[in-house]
Length: 200
Image 1 (cartoon, rainbow, N blue to C red):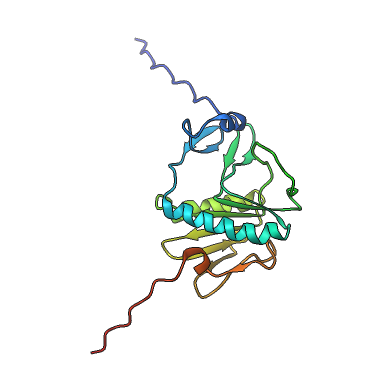
Image 2 (image 1 turned 135 degrees about the horizontal axis):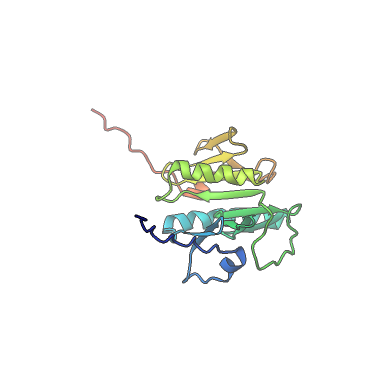
């Protein structure tokens, strides 16, 4: 007796970066990974507040000195056929990589010099670590992983060169943004006060 085989499901239709660009936010909000849509829910208030602070600090420093361009969550075209488009929360492109007059409407295929990822409550430490390593692998020179729940920032230069910045140290641009320095208070706001133990 021949047993009928269930019909094979058709493979999912792969999406291109150009098709992703034409989608509205009502249709899709997220990234494209090897041709497949990976939906990302809109971030919360604190996440976007920290992103705005970082953009303001970097924009004021970099563009006033004509060191490069600062953008928010613009997609970066990291792979072709099938296409992958990932988006850090904040990016800095030096003038050596992207000219100041760049007006391209689509996704850049050039990795930024600096990528910033702000961890959301839904992201595990492993997930943000893996994404930081992914950015370094495609040519990003430095990655900042902002950890709101710890009030700290992990600075990645390589997969083994990772430095944690706390309130005791400034966040610096090093050789990627020479001269840039800010305190974590400028990003997170004043540190919470710790009440002294009551005298007995």
